[in-house]
Length: 431
Ligand SMILES: C[S@@+](CC[C@H](N)C(=O)[O-])C[C@H]1O[C@@H](n2cnc3c(N)ncnc32)[C@H](O)[C@@H]1O
Image 1 (tube, protein in one colour):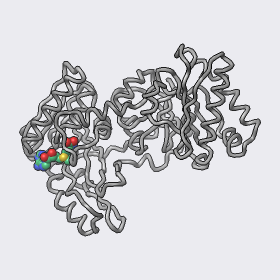
Image 2 (cartoon, rainbow, N blue to C red):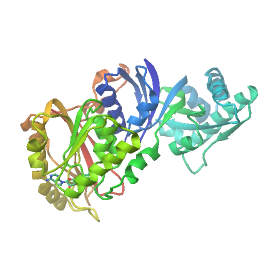
Image 3 (tube, rainbow, N blue to C red):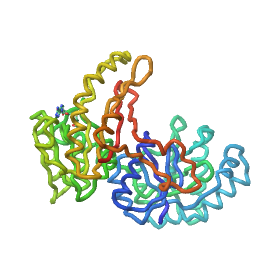
């Protein structure tokens, strides 16, 4: 098993759930050694990290740890400015091989960066100082190795971490030249970035596909996370019965699964087909197999076939676009109006899925004026039909010493953009 650090996106529970589902779908053994809002440390079987990164929607960076420090030493060094602790960190960094790695990666002038991630917010005020300290430590080591180096810091107004765009533009992965200083509760992992999320690839699929629909479409990163949560992979059949312009279908096709789309709107059917054809050309997916059908979700079994798909990932209508936060009674009326469509969908979904197939479905999560969230109570209906809720995390996924508390009870995930009045509640179910 190899240990990696995963720097996650904003919704860390969703990012961790995606990783766990991705490994499970492929029978890749893994143990979560540590998790926090900013990063995870996971032991996994040897795997090609660049292709793992390309397959994930919720991970921003993957790092290979080079040394591990006790966090008390990091606290002493930076919160109490203890010289002895600082020396200890310099020694550990020197023995880690980080700077020799940089010298072997490029013959040109070295240009490197440092990003600091932490669990305990008391490090927030000193993260800039830690970044400069680690930067000058590496620079001194490189000078001792006869190499001059440029160090890329961040301005004090921002947090002390480089964005993935900066890492890509400065070629820091190829040059083994980004140090990740990840401060956990008890241990601090000092790692080198080995893969980075490429936002340009996801953006390309979002804004360069031939047909787009701004208001309804889902961001490709979220679509990819849903595909992964559905345990979709090569050789499986994935259905999206509210496929719109085909965002979820695109991401599933990239996982080399067979995809089937359905939408009541004829324009959407044609738009999704053209988008998938574009994707196949753009990514050279020679063996790709897809069908997009027109029809009502109530005719899903008739259109797609009984027990014919392994996974369903879908986002039905989430209600009207709201200009302001609704009152609770109004939000409840929106939900009540949508319920028949969702119930019809769930009934049909159960019949279309193969045994043990997975359903990943988004329901509306409406923020109201009184701050109370109004959601769709689909639990009873799902159980009456025979679906089982999937609890995303299980004890055996985590290292024994780790306290996991409420995570074990996670059965739905909320994705909420601050600007939006309606968020998404993502449910995971199994037939
Ligand atoms: C929220 S959008 C899905 C967006 C999609 N994920 C995308 O990225 O384009 C919902 C879609 O469901 C379709 N739809 C609405 N009612 C339907 C029904 N009864 N049966 C099938 N499709 C329906 C709409 O035409 C719309 O394209």
